[in-house]
Amino acid sequence: MRVAEVKKPENIIHNVVKGLRNLHPLGILHKDIKPDNIFLDADGTCKFGDFGASVVLPDAAPLADSAYLTNDCGTRSYDYAALELIFPKTHDHVGHPQWLFGQGVNFWALGIMAYELATGAVLE
Image (cartoon, rainbow, N blue to C red; front, side, top):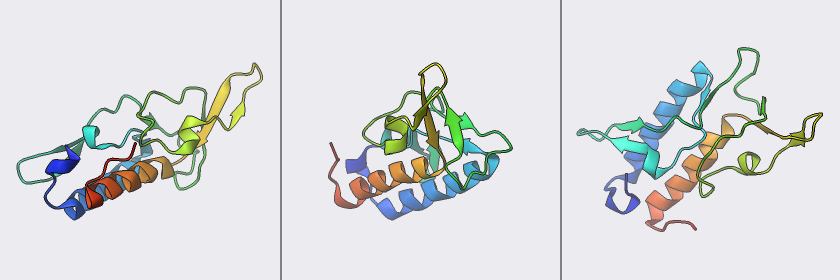
């Protein structure tokens, strides 16, 4: 999706929120929400693409909390990444960085995307 070509940004935001509300109860964190990974079909419905950085949370991790601890933060676009995906929270016993995050990382990226859709300005 190209931000400049979007006619009704509120529909895009609504569709992305609906999509996240379907993913999050399944324990899926996309971690790379950005315009390049949102695809529109003929009727304007949004589809998520590029799940390469996504994770599926273990059953024990409450999704509403920032509860997922990992040594592999994955690749993603820093332009849309929440700070907890950029800076490690702690280090393991060997000194490798570990990140702690939850569903908020998807909503952070959605907020940046919403700003860009509403204003037509791309943050850099």
